[in-house]
Image (cartoon, rainbow, N blue to C red):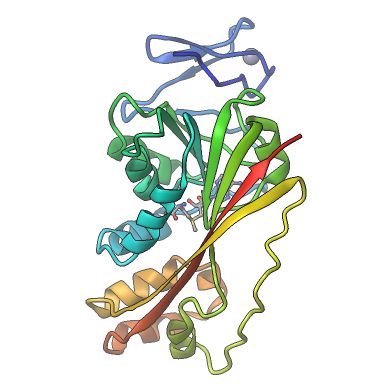
Length: 267
Ligand SMILES: C[S@@+](CC[C@H](N)C(=O)[O-])C[C@H]1O[C@@H](n2cnc3c(N)ncnc32)[C@H](O)[C@@H]1O
Ligand SMILES: [Zn+2]
């Protein structure tokens, strides 16, 4: 199997030797016991991604199966021999995408070491490439390494996607629609501002398909509702007493409303 990693220091190709990836200039990176390699460049002030609390909340929530319809839609959409899950989190989607017959090999990258540790423990088998701690804004992969990239609620690094995608490759995005989690927001905030739907135009990509996945579910416990809120981008900007309110109210019905959008990249 061809190695697709490049050295984050000098940019040379990295070759696997036992449990180490090395370049010709002898920069070397060990593969951890759980199976990931850390190729993140240390940059002070830059994000370290999701912390332990957020990772655990997401793992607990996703394990209940409420986002299974989204995962199924993503798996039916992603197609390509070599796939990257960019911002893979704990590998909930990565693991299932690997079951698709069209996918021969899948890699995952995330800036959160905690998330990648879980992903590399979950995703075992010959279809998985080495998981990697690294930033999607400066990815340690060779140009044109991937046939497809999937991004599920993760930062959108379009310039890097274009660099690591093959000409004719696909980008699959899962994005929330304006009504997504509306009841949850109403339970936390007095005033809820409903966002407008985005125009879905991405520079350099052609939109090929948009599938809507919309349904309602009721979390089994207040803790599950609270875990779901901890997965949202506004969790940390919400005052503690508002966040904690969710733990004291009975579970209620919540709307899940996503779009799975497929784009084609051609130079
Ligand atoms: C909302 S979570 C989604 C995780 C996963 N795709 C899922 O849906 O279960 C966003 C993920 O992006 C990661 N992330 C944030 N900034 C990043 C960056 N610059 N490079 C790579 N990953 C990043 C976070 O650590 C987190 O795991
Ligand atoms: Zn090097």
